[in-house]
Amino acid sequence: MEYILFICTDPEGEDAAPGDLTTEQWGADVDARGVWRHGDRLRPVEAATTVRRRGDDVLLTDGPFAETREHIAGYDVIEAADLDEAVAIAAAHPMARAGRIEVRPVWPLDGGD
Image (cartoon, rainbow, N blue to C red; front, top):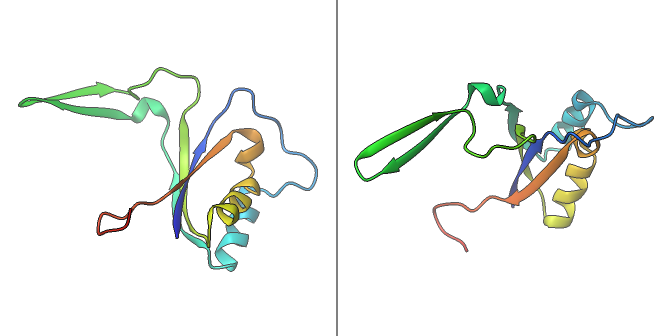
């Protein structure tokens, strides 16, 4: 099953601990294991545009819709057997300590519930 990992900042995150993987090491590990599908960084929230449609009007807002100190900094799509494996993969990511990672199963449009 595919899972998306939303890589989020967290003002209360911690610095890396001795032995923690770097982002590059984590990426190389999940790629070598064949569980990484794709992912990337996101530009800062200042580059975001929020789109809403109300009736026939398309409304654009600069930046994210929610006012928050935390923001999504990137994402990774992984393949995992179940949520436990996806959580283990996310827990090894450096941003699990420095920020936070939301793990969410992908819900394909072509079926499944």
